Length: 124
Image (cartoon, rainbow, N blue to C red):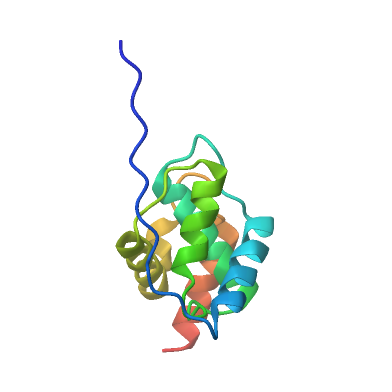
């Protein structure tokens, strides 16, 4: 049986946001310290872990402009399968609108997702 070839690496977004890039990089770095992606998990599971951790560190899913590039770069630096920029934004939107859909995602921080749900219910 032949070994699976790794997924191609998606290109990083070309636009940089000078005013907020340092904040976005600091947020991703801090979030990696809380719930770091793990080798062996699916791309989705690792993305959810990072996004929920970013919410935990930032207190909101309205991340600093330009957050996708450092998130992708972190995955690429760790040698993990990395979603493309559109998928990152889609996951963030899904987490923003309905965090509970990720409760069954493998290795997701369930306690934080439940808190996200409570916060979402309170803001309505």
